[in-house]
Image (tube, rainbow, N blue to C red; front, side, top):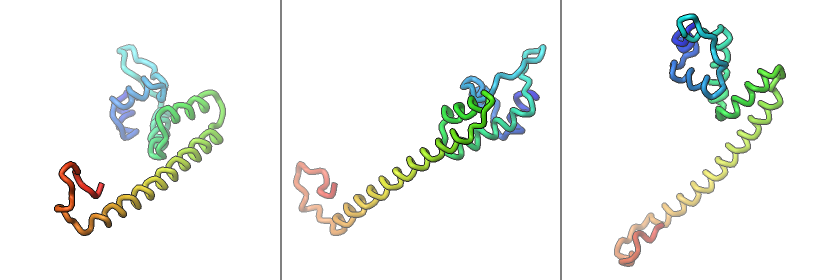
Length: 129
């Protein structure tokens, strides 16, 4: 199938497919005599996998690693599990940091509940920060 057909079938754009190919995520397609890319039906599943990896917040480099393992003839399941575990740990840390930030901002807001602009010194922008 040509690149436009693959883009439509995979729900993406031809520009994205060219990018995936340049980045080594999508294997280079055979070329027709006229020079058009001619993708196999398996390319749709590969692009779908790339999109699912992105939806799981994996980087394109991590997705490429998984595809390289699969292309090397091995099942990447353990590698995927490790990546997902690391991503989950990262998200949990972000949630913790956001909770701490929320608490700090809440305290600052509470301190600013009684606004008294006359108490600010001239060289001070705002005493609540």
